Amino acid sequence: MDLPNPYNVGADLLERNLRAGRAAKVAIHSATGDLTYGDLAKLTHGAARALLDLGVRREERVLIVGFDSPGWVASFLGAIHVGAIPVPVNPLLQRSEDYDHFVEDSLARVVVVDANSEEKIKPAADRTSHQPKLLRADQLTPGDAVIPAATRRDDMAFWLYSSGSTGKPKAVVHLQHDIPYTCVTYAEQVLGITERDTTFSTTGLFHAYGFGNNLTFPYWVGASTILHAGRHTPATVLDTIEKRKPTLFFSAPTLYNAILNFDGAKSRDLRSIRHCVAAAEALPAEVWRRWKDAFGLTILDGVGSTELLHIYCSNRLDDLRPGSSGKPVPGYELKILDEQGKPVPKGEAGDLYVKGDSALALYWAQHEKSKSSILGDWFFTGDRYRVDDDGFYWYEGRSDDMIKVSGLWVSPIEIESALLEHPDVTESAVVGVNIDGFTKIKAFVIAKPGAVGGSALITELQDHCKSRLQRYQYPHVIEFVTELPKTVTGKIQRYKLREREATPA
Image (cartoon, rainbow, N blue to C red):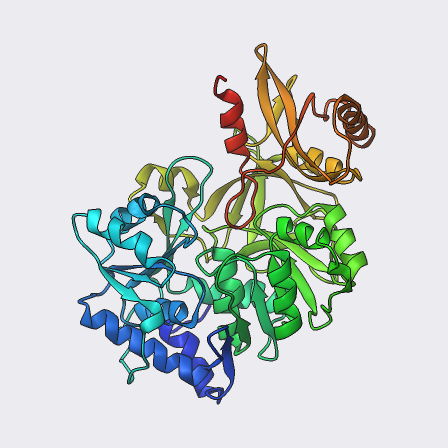
């Protein structure tokens, strides 16, 4: 990309729209009212001034803990505007102690909160040695123009915390040029987003996926966004779509499935949407087909990561294979290597590496992790993939989720997808368990209401998998459960199921 130097992405995302004459165009639809690009620019300048008044200096961190809102957006852009480093984190954590790591790790000078998070964050801030100040995002006021900091295209711009499967979350450091790179690659060349679009993402702004969907992508082209504060349910999602009429809808596979199973969903009006996007976990082909049958809409499934900032491999409307992650997004390169670092034959699974200029600069204060994950231009994703003869990439699970049974690798995704095709199954999660010293496959299954469980259904599900997969790819053990552990974005946490099985009763 030919970006100028100096370059400040926080200023650019708003000023490009003001220069284009969009000051009176709605940038944000929310429950608290609509904000135009002109309104948002003034609110961002107000946030920038508030941060400066609180003593925030260049490259000092500003933690943001709150639901999606205009104040959240203004705080994020305002922090970059003055050369500080915004650090969004999940507002849905339950305990005050859950935030201790983020406050300490970031050494934040200021923590931006809202009415939902202030009570949880204040004790965490008080427990730290550096005593950050609190700023209410919902109490920001518009301000006069603040001159943007003369940051450079390769300067640090913001952090995002990776969820991680084990251990404490790691801060992923991104640079000023990373946002524009995702906008001119995935947003423009796969989504085809324009200023006529309105985006709606069920994944929050604190998450890399939702951050691109509902902030950077629309602001890059002058589109409008819909912000919803709080958790999403099938009912709130459908109500929002009918009321606000988005043209681009972004969600996670688990929520797509929940909407399909929601009573009366098929009668709801989704005609405003031109296409849908899925990420954060693999989208089963069966869910793709059911969504297409129910609403006539195509879901573009893809894979991305916090470390690459957004989706780097995706299906397209004119080049699609349900159940796959699609093909590399223009601007990114992928390779699949074996444990010795050699390319695997086509059709065989291996570790996925990705190259693209939106990749993280490093993990903050995680030198060894940075060295083991960033290998020159390439990033080790920790995902296992195979590529077929037509160039489509197929997810085989996380490197630490794969199950080796009798010397053969088994993908939990394939078994979960097969189970989902059975009429009595709502959801499932598959892990490897130790039985008498040997690794066996165990499936945790949520049965549909009215399904008769017990040994008969277990045998039926095992036979169902054997008829669709290789003979060794079936669950040796099946346990019926009422819920599965998930992240706030709906991704199943298989490691928690593994930990539970490893813990003596």
